Length: 215
Ligand code: IMP
Image 1: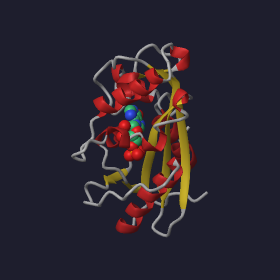
Image 2: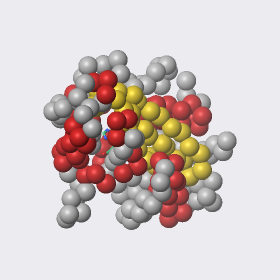
Image 3: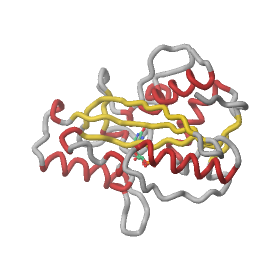
Image 4: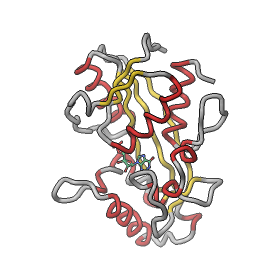
């Protein structure tokens, strides 16, 4: 596995929710992190069919454009009763005809699909959030770290914290949605702690252990 020479990277995302979470997760490690937004990098088209492919497209584009190692996250919600949908198309389900994203509509779309297949009890509404972090270098080399958070979907949405589909997702072992949790509760992890809760924190924990020697 290739390691980072310096703690200076680009976070290849334009998603404010993800950027906030990465800033939290990286804070204890003394990173100098800049976002793709700050570099005015264009958002590449996500043409892959897996989280890994899309994560690579974003990280490699940012690494090539800046000459720095770049970290990206491709993530989504996979709902069992819908055969794993929306999966890599999770952000697309929020897209409106004017090109803007509306996650209230996206959550409703998932709910309508669940009702159409008769999924009304918690045990039929299971799924997982998946996050794949890709760390890519300008020469094209890449390392991957995957995190998953199992849970079930609720309706109506609950809570105003977090972003995206957080208000409809209750992680296993909890009775509140991610939207009702503080960022710290949703990550469920600090360096030195054994377990993480969210998919992103779980992927980041693997990244931190492999790349930074964090406990
Ligand atoms: P992408 O990785 O840019 O393709 O977008 C992933 C989409 O998945 C985001 O726009 C969110 O809607 C959703 N998503 C990913 N992670 C989370 C999360 O932690 N909470 C809620 N929604 C998420």
